[in-house]
Length: 342
Image 1 (cartoon, rainbow, N blue to C red):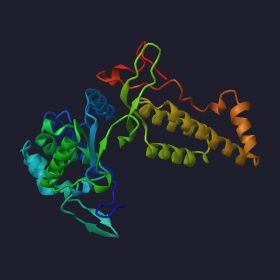
Image 2 (image 1 turned 90 degrees about the vertical axis):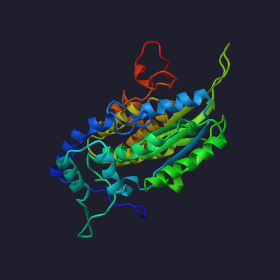
Image 3 (image 1 turned 180 degrees about the horizontal axis):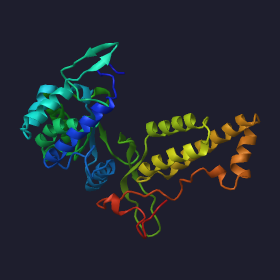
Image 4 (image 1 turned 60 degrees about the horizontal axis):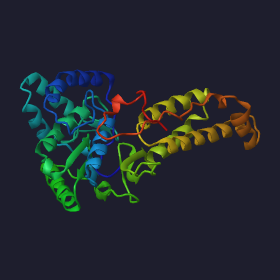
């Protein structure tokens, strides 16, 4: 746990039920006010909606990116300022009293009850909504001249036209967060210039980088913002596969994980990384077979790759990737006739 962060706790079943009920009451009220720049934990909005904005804006020419996230956001939101924001739209005293009680419930640390004056009820269903309600002040104060803001809860990206605009944007963002009692996380704050052959940035599990396509016969090469699973997402997949393999029903468990992982990352230029993850799964499966039968690694690989007609039922990840396209809603593309896959 990083310094300044509170330990994430899971509320009791009764508390979760109460929080879910409060969320049902409050969400429609604030959802009517939330702005299009906010994508996290909102009905009918997803990470891929936020990622589509990056594709569109880079195609328009915004190639300078300010990336950051808010330091200890969920534990740093001041209770009184949060309640002031809520009271702008809610006047029912019973609901406000209940919400104050939820915020003041506190957490147990080393056998002692702590009641901090900041932080949303982490681990419960109400916390993401409270974060969005509070950060709506940031969304509302944002000026389009500062760049195109894309916010997913406490993760932020701003697409800018130039280096000078990006520098002004970062300064503006820092000031706005300070007015809310928050600050950008220094280790994750930087300005990135997207250019072919240059570096990129990570956002919502993907690594984003400007690439130049190989020119086909009769067609000019195209420069576009590509994305694929980030190094961190790849390591998470490997770690998860390694933990699952010692269990019984090994292929079933690995397939469940790979199916969910691929369902998220398939909307990107992810084919090469999908093959790497599946190759890793095959290798770990071969090691598992060899250890189970107390045989050599070569024996395990022979069983998986050659003796089994379907590699022991390990799910295939080929042919499911859908390349992003600018100005074309990602939901309209899966399984669409004529859509190019690779």
